[in-house]
Image 1 (cartoon, rainbow, N blue to C red):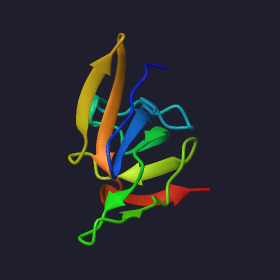
Image 2 (cartoon, one colour):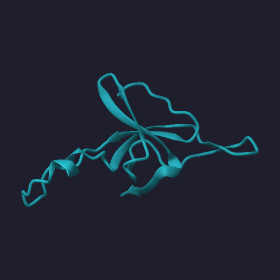
Image 3 (cartoon, rainbow, N blue to C red):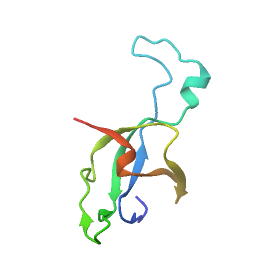
Image 4 (cartoon, one colour):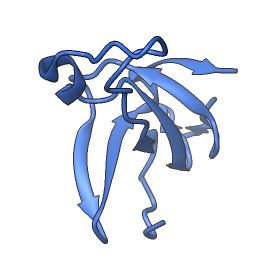
Length: 97
């Protein structure tokens, strides 16, 4: 993994690509297969959210968490030929267990 250190409440996610066919073998239309992933693995987290009083509030997500997020929210970047997504912790909908 590239050395990325997100600031404050930003989170770097390695996207988990959607399957192009279902478990039963049905191929998904190309439109659905090309959408941005809505799941990913957290690979880096910032130190926390900067509150108005200057304190840092720690993040709830940690490296290794598998998370759900809305597909149109993250910024996509490419570092060392690997694609990553960056978004704020508040844009993460859930941690998958």
